[in-house]
Length: 335
Image (cartoon, rainbow, N blue to C red; front, side, top):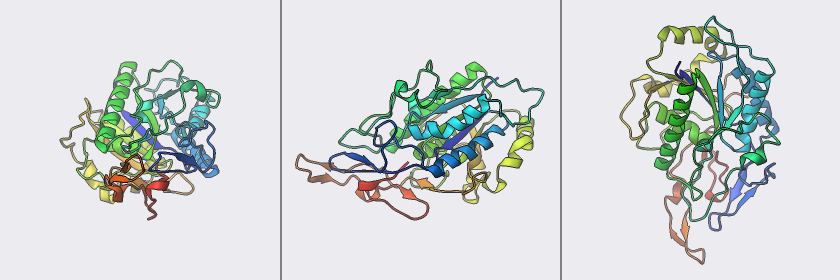
């Protein structure tokens, strides 16, 4: 059996940090459990979102067979309640004669799903190593071999696409070889959007185009094209029609996503269709803290005295929240 469904979730609501774009010094608003400035834990609201997400994931069909997560604390903290409850026998998905009893889940920590930082003249912080994460997360897969971590000096948006395409292609290939039917990926807003573009082969020339949603704890669903259509109807009849708000299956401004894949420079060996885009109907607070690209987020270059050498699109060095707030480069709350 080949991989049929990829569930993609963004981490829950987290605390913020700021960065000095001249010195490259990051400052957390609240100290992280790992001690890293860009590795904050979820807020109390984010923890509630993660619990609500877990309840929804437990009822999905096809049920989740494998779990992959960014190594950042907030992403692991977001997906861990689901894994713990599934392993405790709280799976609520309606079974069929074709389903096999669920095996114990572990979390495959995948560096290819890591946070995205724009290009800079300094090194961005990295995530904590696996051995430092195990005291907090007991279900980590110690034997999993991850893709390489992103460049410490950041990535352009095309480089982000390349990293995400390589990572998800490796995940698909591994799941195909293991007979995995459905997988969930826990990651960050920029990666959520990049995954949507790469999986559907619809990468816009303008990265700031609003195509895929990325709300905190939002759930997106991608189905492999060419799979049994009868199985698709059965799956959505069993669960998705009950748990997923049909309004957000494909948002009105995303109706073009239902069309055939287009040519792009990030080809995968398989084609995928977006069936659900960042659904938040199962969350008590609904859609929150949406994010979109605003330029390439490159940091301004400076000389040894701190004088600006070039702006590198400095007018677009902000992450834009959908509530209209725009944050300067010195305080990007980002992903």
